[in-house]
Image (cartoon, rainbow, N blue to C red; front, side):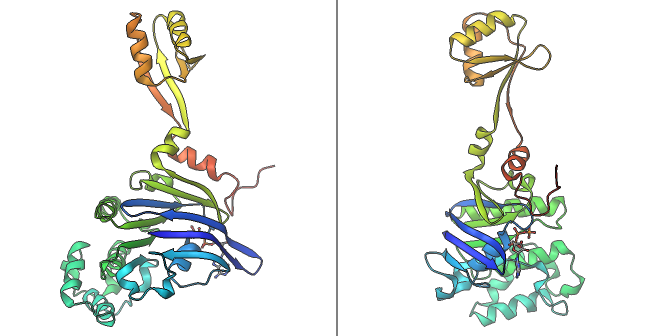
Length: 301
Ligand SMILES: Nc1ncnc2c1ncn2[C@@H]1O[C@H](COP(=O)(O)OP(=O)(O)OP(=O)(O)O)[C@@H](O)[C@H]1O
């Protein structure tokens, strides 16, 4: 479990994180979203004890990072895929981290297998692609088999296969009951991976929601086409729906869902040629939510 409470971080005149509160629960993949400069990395660094809060709390399993007795076994992190020394072999890099924490060599082999790097375990990291470095960073995060995982932009630089792989890995880690927080500035990456979303802008909380709730919140009614639009309008209005002219010969209905519309039309023998729920894409929803909070957004007059 991750708990952020009234967290504030100032760098001189810049408030990077501003009284931010949210909770990330076990068993879910939570996307941590916000435009560039929103404060995602700062929040993650504070959670990992790499930076100090100006005020407020950032807790992993109920304690600040510094108070965790065996941090590597409680929280695993991927912050910077470039962190491994290029001259080292993958196996040696992980072996070095493992030995420092009393983790057996067997576990090193296990995590290399898990991230698909077993075949290049003896190759030097300098020759690794960005995707391979991401995998190595994830292997290091998993060494202590921690219940909490924090990945900063894990999809960065991955090819489509790598993106699919990481999605499945994150989902399976959450399905095992772990708490998984992944940051991104792209909704498109999150909507297929995350169950929940914590959206921030300029250091402040904008939304803390499930992906489903966000989609529902930005629902745009149901598009309906029928050769008998006037009768249909009367029937749907009588059932509590609001019917407006849509594009072309379509109607846009709000207040009734697809099933209710279909049932009412059937009950009156009115043929339907189309019934489709319309919603803004999550990308549009995200743009709307974060409009005005991008650090380097276009200036409009
Ligand atoms: N060490 C630092 N010193 C001064 N300002 C900083 C420092 N670290 C971050 N900031 C500022 O704090 C704000 C939040 O930055 P942060 O890196 O946390 O955002 P982010 O959401 O991770 O963005 P990105 O998606 O670009 O990585 C930015 O305005 C940034 O310039």
